[in-house]
Image 1 (cartoon, one colour):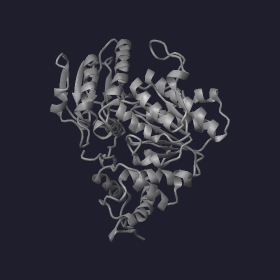
Image 2: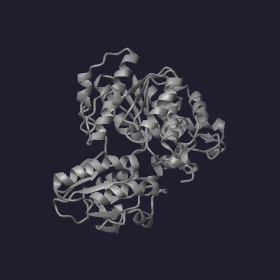
Image 3: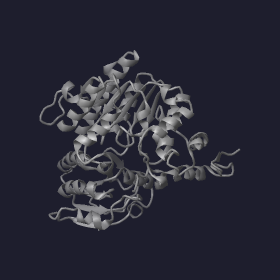
Image 4: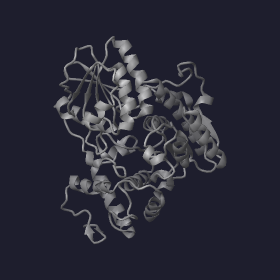
Length: 451
């Protein structure tokens, strides 16, 4: 009838599903915990479910979500039952844990949380150092779900870094590192080399590793780790040909941008290796076609508004993402003959500076909003990051004011002038929720230490 956790009731039968989710997500208030010892113990306590299916393990500063979605589509098109674990989510917590692209229901999340809390009770109580974090519970939940649903393949994305990430208890068939950039430097290191070594921590002895288009210094670090672990490296740069635009011979995908074609190439290599490792037949023609039918939201997503205008939503949120959206914005201006108004809210000045430098090059106006996240920059911080030469209008507003009801944006623009939203995954979630006539619950998102 109830779970007794270290002398307290976790989930009473009288609690609503929403209350149970709130109780689970309250763990985020204790922050993330790096290291895999707690995670390994929790998984062992519930029967090591991560060993029940073959999987592909991905790390990367950017691109791992899109690449994961591409891999999932390729594997499912080949007839496999595929589990997909990613983070953060945009609208619903269950988006993080999907089987054949069906998100885990709120009710199943609550039932799983009850089981996992009971297993975790032997390690202490919430708030104790040895009690699992929110992300560790969600990761174990994903493994249990994939095992219970008899998945014969899974795509598992790291949360942060790689070496000390909770997902790093898996024994994958293939490892993938999509990109390396300067992000989360307070946790992963202050140089590309340091961050590359952290992400290379997912490489296992004898397991092939696929590399996206990485900076040379980062790739050198990862190759050194791979050599030490006798892991063969498959590099997109070596397998595919590139011209001056970096797109020649890369596979096509319906996700927008040259960087997505690079992710598609990474996914194609990883899928082929996965099928070789698991002894299954791989159809490259089928795989390439699958890459043209990928569903992954807020990646330069064009959303029709009620009044006939189009809003473009993107999750570019750091320096590496700024490089990608710079190309997309340049192309947008060339195609439309006008500059877009850009709505943005960004988490941290380190990210804001490169993003706002790009936005200032292409925007007619910049509208600042503040996502409901502890790390979100204040309006004043954002203003200080705008290049001095920007001559467009700058204003402060909110998601609620801009998107008061379904498929509606109150921003006044000429019909031909695009509207772009970018700067944070959390902002994208809030905007998607507002456009759907609902709201995003920030309490269901992750919280980093000291955020």
